[in-house]
Length: 281
Ligand code: ADP
Image (tube, rainbow, N blue to C red; front, side, top):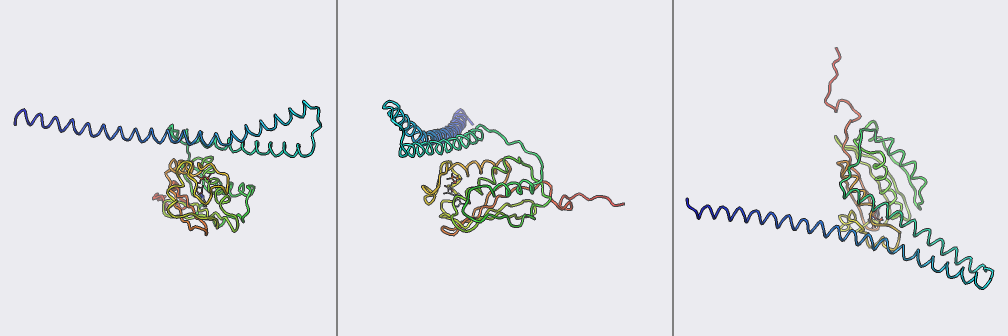
């Protein structure tokens, strides 16, 4: 044992530290890169509706100014044009506000915001969503199947966020299904409940499944067909993670999709599952 061994040990410790630093640095770079891409994708998405809104407002302003200057009465063609422009403004403004809401949710998630949760019955939460979904625009038959697997089951969760979660999947099913049906029902294992949303719609290429949970990702087939933000499923993923749940996807292109949201059960309906025995004597 001599100074050489000491130096050898020191260099290997330093090398180890450098390696770890390099690793941390690459991880930070990665986070930074992801954040920068998110911000740039978000600004791009916001700019598109804004351009339409500004273009239409300009058009309206010029048209009405010219009429005012010339003392002309507006004719039906001009009224028609104005109405169209105002309609575009309203729908693009609505799209922007959806986008801003979605971006806020994700910014909250990124900032480490934790969803406040309490133990509560899952059945009334799902039933409420099923009822409200009847009011959504759709071209398909909407029904809820067997919800008995949820009977008496409690989960540790947030009513509002769980409802938002279900709406994301139901609205997607409505958006990506032109004919046929969308159906919601329930499943149960020993320690989890599953809420299944099935549709007879577009479906997807299997390879796209892991990508749809990424921010701003929209599958090829759905682009242009519907106005979406590409953020719904990334918000859904965050809500599911916050509830310690998981998601299962089965899909066939051209035939339809099945999404199952799995959530841990805190209080099962059958008290014998709790492992507590109540003395009878
Ligand atoms: P958006 O619906 O706004 O595009 P989402 O994050 O909710 O964004 O979904 C991402 C993509 O996943 C959609 O663009 C679509 O391609 C695909 N997708 C989601 N749900 C379905 C579904 N039920 N059927 C077919 N494709 C779907």
